[in-house]
Length: 180
Image (cartoon, rainbow, N blue to C red; front, side):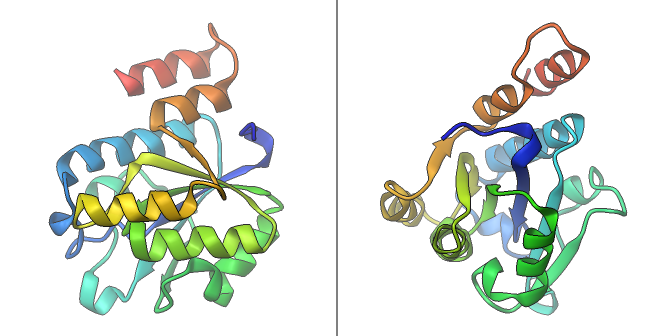
């Protein structure tokens, strides 16, 4: 599966204040998530944000929130899968995008269940492996094993340059700066 700019959307799952510090290698993950968000903005890829039970887990971490504009749709959910939340599912459908790029936490719960539901609905799913995390590496690995024949695995750098497609452009230069 090739990830194409005109057919892609980033679904940014549950990177929240009270949960995120407990995620394995969260500092490295935060850097990758920030690069991904910045790159998607440069490439003008739409972003949808989900937040799981904000009363208990808080809002999206500040470093990400500062990069998002007020137009970024953010949805609170109680379901683990984003697709089981009618508002999020409707926003994805209404976007007209058929390739959903996934990033966030936790890989073995909300990200996994969302990916499975998206696949069942006929979407192409790209899982950004260095931009997903769980509290343990084992749980992240389990989700990767579960999804290995269903989704395309990618990395932040790979997906941004795949969406960019051409070197030498202003977008390429901006992406290169973000990745460094």
